[in-house]
Structure formats: C-alpha cells, structure tokens
Image 1 (cartoon, helix red, strand yellow):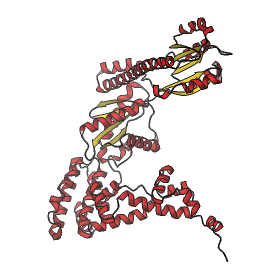
Image 2 (cartoon, rainbow, N blue to C red):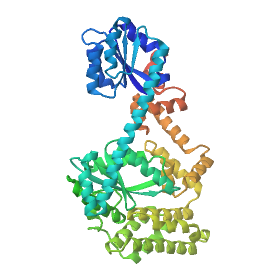
Image 3 (cartoon, rainbow, N blue to C red):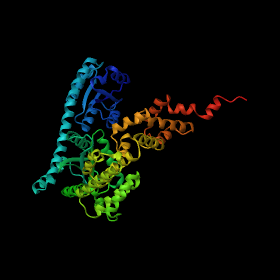
Length: 524
C-alpha cells in the first residue's frame, strides 16, 4: 500500500482531500499532512511517503521549491500538484519537474482517481524491479562465495575482484553452517522449503549472504556471533523461522575473520565442527571453543561388563535415574577408548538388543519385546550426537521398565502429578511424550480417555485455579500471568476470561476481601 502526504496551507483543503475518496480502496493510505513546504520537508524523513499531493502556491516555500527539495532526497518520489486557474502557466513549470499529475481546485474526484490508478501501476512496477535487482545482487554474492570456497585460485580471484561491486565489503565476516535434517515426517521438499525460509530471513534482513556447499546451508554473517547470549538468541531466531517445519538442525560457527580471502578458513572450521558434532555435548551452537570437547579430558569411565550388568538390574527394578547415569558413563567410556561414531552406535544397539532379550526371558509378560522395539533400536543409528544416542537409549529402557512395573493409567497419573507440581513451566504434550516414549497423538488420546479432557484444556484449568487464588491474595494481573506460566499478559487475559467468565482485573476486584467487606458490611 502506497503512503501519501498531503501538503496545503488551507486546513479545509487538507481535510477535504483526506475524505474525498476511500484511499485504501485504491491501494493508498494517508500517512500525514503538512501546512507548508518547510513542515513537509521535516515530516518527509519520518513518514517516507511514496506520493506527495502538494499545493503549488504556499507561503514561505512554494510547491516548485518543495518539489526540487524532495527530488534531491528521492528521485523516484511520485507527486501530484494542485493549483487554481490563475496558476496554470506557473504549473507548467512543475510538469517539467517530472510530476505525475496536475489538478485544478476544487479537485475533481474522478480525475484524482484516474491519476492514482496510473501512479499505483507505475509504483508497483518500480517495486518489482527494485526487488529483482536486490535479489540478483544478493544471489550473485552467494555464487561468488561458493566459487571462493570451491578452492581454485581463478575462482578466488574472481570473487575478490567482484565482491565489493555487490556490497560485500564488510568489516568482519563469520561463517554459520547449518546441517538440516528431517524430523518426524519431514521430506526432501520440506527441507528445501525450510532452507529457503532461512535464506530469506538472513538476506532480506540484511544480516548475511547464503550459499550451499557439501550438503550444508551456509550463511556468511555480517554481524559476528559473540558469547553464549548471542548464540542462544541465534538459536531462538532459527527455531522461530523453522516453526511448522518437520526439520531439525545443527549449527556451527567458524572463526571471525576480517579479510575476504580468509572466509574459507572460517568455513573449514565450521565444517570441522559439524564433522565432529557426534562427540561434542549438545550445545545451542557449536563454535571453535568447543573443539577441545571432541576428546573428553576428564571422564568417568568403568569396565563395560560391569556397566551392562548394572543396567540390567536398574531396568528390571524400574529405577530410571541409575539407568540414565550408567548410559552416560558408558558413552564416555567408549569415547575415551577412541571408538568411532559407528562403533559407538553399534555397541549401543547390541547392548539394548541383549538387554531386551534377557528381560523377556525372565519376564513372561514381555514376550516379543525385541520385535516390538526393533524400530526404536534401529533409530539408534540415526542419532546425530552421543548425547542424543544416550537419551534415545534411555528412552527405550525407560519404556521397557514401565511395561514391567506400571500400567498406562499409572503413566497418566504421573503426568497429572507433574502438571499440578509444574503448572508454571512450559509444559507441552510433545515434551512429555518424549519423556514417556509415546507417540504425541497416541499420548493425547490416552490422556483424554483417562481424564475426559484434552491435555492443554486440563493444563489451562489447573493454571486458572491457581490464578484465581493468586488474584484473591491481591497479586497484580501481570504477576499472576507470569507465575502460572503465561509470558504474554494479553493471552493470559483471554484464557482467564474463557475459563472463568470474567477478566482477571474484574475478578480481582470482585474477590478482594477488603472491598467485599466495605460493600457488604457485617451487621451486628
């Protein structure tokens, strides 16, 4: 939608033009008005209009002078001039200033609309051209980066010679590499769409130039990422961009460089981190300072046979905490022995298979255990880090342990207890499904069958009961919202009204003990 500024020294004319036609219906919005040329120049930088409708005769600075000043600031600005019959010869000079239209006062509605429709078509064509030119320049930079990283001296020389011409002459550069992979029902087409969303986010925001190389999506960042806080912010941004996609990623940062020819060094460092990601503990973003974590310096190790025996008894007894600790010790021991990624995965798969077989032999209700968990065991080979492998193995054994010691209804009871104790946390059904090793949809149905309510409905009701109590105690609405797990006060307000039937502030007043006592005094 085009923004319009109306400039005229007569208040009635300014008001009349804003109401003359339904501007929005023709693709325009009134951004502001000005009483003279000087005020128009002051407001121009703030409003940044696409079209200026200005009177040609104004005190102090006339329309022609205003047009000349505005042209100096924006050669593409569109303009329509207004004048009386006596100013016709004077108005001809404005036409030579490349104005888009000339209207006599009083303004004819149909004539103005004709001009507006013509101007809007020109403006849309100009915008498309600008967007194409910008995207072409950015894509050219991406191709130049790929040429630089491909390794040949000729390509590198080409890059260095053309980089500045496409605006790629920053003070610092840092390579961000993203290894995208499907999650759940993700597919190759969705991976491409996700990569495109990330590319658009960085390039349209002016914070980086993207490239594709060796199956990685890369971004040369204009603003380097420094410190853990900036890493967390980067992860949040990427998570937001990928909302709705069945796609996960590992992110790695190369070192910061200050010369274009050193970008390959930053790229190689980020690539080395991704190659070694399996043995690096799960971190928001991998960076050069994590390289010393590839080989653990101080780890708790133990005899492998001893770990296996203790694991069996912990699972059989349903003791989940020792299971998690033993699996972590096992992973550290294998890493310290110098096992490769595939060797570690194979060891875990064989260990879990052996445990399932042994448990099934001694528990008749677990017949067919190996067949049931065959798919879960095979997914051990798909885990992308040692930490994920340990967690996945733990999920398998925890699920087996629950089958030995608990029924599904007892799992739901545990979930209900968790909700009542942790209602203020960011509880999600998918998170609990991972903890209990259930499919999201299946756990949701199971929860509703047992409780009669959907998970989110039950959680909201628990939160509302606590919110009512806190409001009765005199806490402010924003304090209550935060304490019951809502970061957005407006969202809490709508939820509270839905479940309670009135707003939090009204409920707080109605249940205020002091107010009730004053309104309804106790008679003696």
